[in-house]
Length: 290
Image (cartoon, rainbow, N blue to C red; front, top):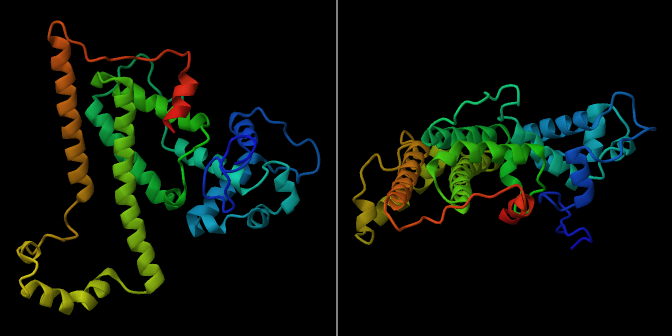
């Protein structure tokens, strides 16, 4: 473990694996800016933008300081004046893409109550799925110890604001966000893995399953798998929308919990233990959730 408390990683695929203090300085704009040496016009923003573009097009493994220097037309050493290395750059890239779907302060309506929490959950899930489609490399990152920057915190703030009408305890609100994100990540990873398998093997999904068909048909006729053999023809149809099905079931489950909490509050002499945090200690609690 590094002296700053970050985890060790050599491949740059884990957030918080570099110089934690330097990443935080860069994310929050408190670090010293280069005063001499770099190519005129080179900025940290341009470096992060180029890194995200390379990762989107070719994957995270293609991102290197040497590659970025070529993309930006600058010397490799010039980049190091702005960011120590790939691990710290990854922290900046993650915060950048997490902020893409968020409204700016100017776009946020003033004094407008949050939309129905069900619509908020729906929007949260669809927005995250879209983000993962545009940036599939996000699925390759270990975010167990994410370095929290402005975009990450703003996203969490907006999510909590949109969900507060659920009337749940603070840990439960965080769990709603984790549950939705985990569901979306699971489906997105399955789709991304399927696409990667096609690229790596050269076999389409149809060709892959056609190769297995004779063996599967014999297995079904053997009588050893009666449940599988009795499934309808459309069981594994690509037309079935697992995302819509799962999202509707998640929302229905949350509705049941909200109704339960509402009933508890309406019953004299009972309490749901709802607590809401104050500004004091928020940073520690936010960091603890990761």
